[in-house]
Amino acid sequence: MQESPLLTSGISENDINDEARNENYSKQINILFNEIMEDLMKNDIYNTGHISEQELLDILQKKLPPGKQLNISLFQKLFQDIYKNIDMNIDLNDFCKKYIHAHEELKLNYEILQKGLEKEKNLKLKIESNIEKVKQERLNENGISPNSCVSTIIGKITFLSQINSDSIYFIVSLDENEKKTMIKNVENPNFTEKITFKIQDKQSTLSYKLYSSETNQFIGCSDVPLYIINIDNEEFNPEFELKDDNNQSIAVFKPKIIVVTSYFEMYQKKYENIDKNIESYQAKINDLKQNLDDIALPYKKEFENFHIRLLKEPDNGNNNGILVKGVEGALANFFNDKKVKWILTLKIILYYNIFMLLFTTLVKPDFISLFICLILVMFINTGKYNYFFELFDKILIGFLIMIAYDIIDYLFLRKYSNDSMSAIEGWGKFFNFLGFFGKIALFLASFVIKSKYGNNGLITE
Image 1 (spheres, rainbow, N blue to C red):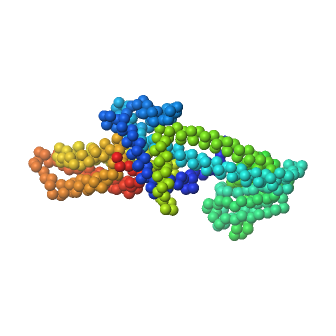
Image 2: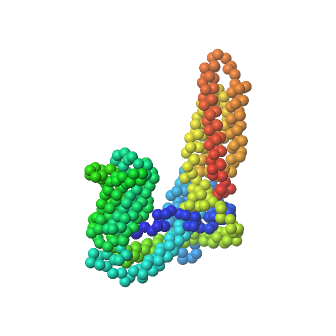
C-alpha cells in the first residue's frame, strides 16, 4: 500500500476522540469499571477476586444475545497480558481494566482510520479535479508537455576543505534560465529553497555553481544532464561533487530533484495510489469494526450507557484536558500500569532500603521502615499501583517519620554499649548511614512520581 501522509504524521489533537478530552472521562471510566466489575463478582461466590479462563469465557458467552457467539480468540489474546495467581486463575480486577482499555483503544483507532479514509477521499476529489484540468495535455517528440518542469532542493553541503567565506550562494541554471539561492552559515550550509524550471528538452543540463558571497569568487560547479534522471514524476537523490577550475573536489552534496514530464501521468499515478489507500483503509476499518463489536458485545449495554453519560455531561467547551495519544495519558496509569516507566527505579530503591534495614536490624531494629517498604513492594509486585497514589499522603508521612527517626537516632539515641560490641555497632552505624540516603532517595523519587502522574485516570478499588 502507498503510504498516506496520515500514516506517517502520527496522531494529532484533531485525531483524538472528543470523549478522551472530556473532563468527565476519567470519572465515567470509573463508573463503567464498577458496573462491569460488580456484575462479574456475582459469579465469584467465594469472593477470591479470581476466576478460571474457561469460567470467564462461559460467563461472557452467557451475556451475549441468543444466536451470538463469543470471539474466543480475541478474548484469549486479552487474557495473555492479565495477571494470574498460582492456580493460573485470572484476576477479575485486572481483567476489567484491560477489557475497558482494549475497547477504548480499538474505538480510538477506529476513529483515526475513519478520519484517514475521509482525508484520502478528499484528496481523491482534488486529484480528479487536477486530472480534468490536464486531460488534454499534449507531449512533444521528447515526451515533454508544455508545463513540464524540474524542481531541485540543494540540501546540505559537505565541504572537503576549508572555505574562506562567511556566506555562500548557488547559481542554478537550466538552458538560458538562472536562479540564485544564498545562505549565511558556512559552518552548517543547508539550502532548503526549492528552485523550479520549465523543461523544453530532455537533453538540457541542470548546472550548479557555487560562489563566495563576499567576493563573488567561483568555488566549484557540478552539472546534471536531465537524460540520466529517468524516473519521471519521482524524487531523485543523486550525489554530486563540486569541482574547482583545477578539477579538484571542493564539496559533495545530494540534491533532491523531481522531474515532471507529464502532469496527466503524474496525477494518474497518484489517483491509482489513492484508490489503493482507500481500499486498504476500508478493509482495515471493516476488520476493526468487527473486533470492536465483538469485544463490546458481552457488555454492549454498559458501553452504550457509558457514551450516553458522556454526552449528558459535556465539558462546557473546555478542551484543555488531558490529550490522549494512542490511549496513553489519561488511561495510562489506570489501564497500562505495567508499562509505567518509573516502576523499575522505585523497585530498585525499595530493595536497596530493605537490604539496608535487614543488615542493620541486629544493632538498630527499624520495623516501621521495613513494614512500609515491604508493603510498597507488595503493591508493585502484584500490580496494585493505584494504591501507591491513593495512599500517597500517608506514605509520604511514613517516609518523613523514617528519615526523622534516623536523624534522632544518629544524634541522640544510639550509644556504644561496650568495647566488645563497638566494632559491630560501628559497621551497623555505617550501613545505617547508607540506608539513610536510601530513604531520602525513596522520598524524593516518590514525590517526583506523584507530581508527574498525579491521580488522573485512577480508580478507587
